[in-house]
Amino acid sequence: MEALDALLTRVSVPRLHDPAPDAAQRQLLFRAALRAPDHGQLRPWRFLTIEGAARERLGELFAQAVSASGAKPEMLAKARAMPLRAPLLVVVIASPKTHFKVPESEQLLSAGCAAHGIVIAAHALGLGAIWRSGDLSHDPLVKAGLGVGAKEQIVGFIYLGRAEGERRTPQELDPGDFVTAWQG
Image (cartoon, rainbow, N blue to C red):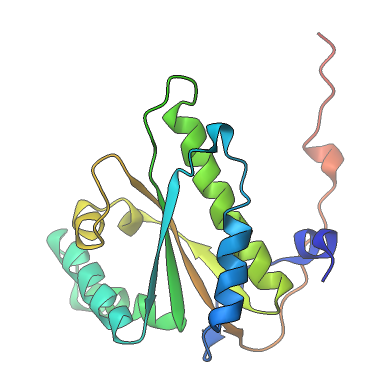
């Protein structure tokens, strides 16, 4: 798939099934992530892969986090099932470095670009992907359970697998609705 085709036709794919991306595909996904804009070449990111029984353990971690807020049993069941929606999850973690010239906010954006690289590469490889975040990505219990450091942030959980059914066609947006020429 051509780069512009991948950028212009990518959509989130929420229904995913086995098989997970194979070793060669994973290598390409992470190589694409590592091409993210990176001022100072700090590589302010890291990735965790979660698959197999580890998805169930992540579900239990999610349920513990939801339980701490007094959730009802159906919310606990939903939290447990979240990681089972795809055969592979990639946790994208912003891991900022102290640098006199590159603020942490810029490094967080760079980690977001790395996540975007994974999602675009997955689409180009014919895989399905969806980038999810939400409250659990900021939850201290989840962060601790995943070994996310105090200065790190979870940018998102990327769910990867084979697309189930037909992909939707992305809505065509007019760039003119979002671009304004500044006249000084």
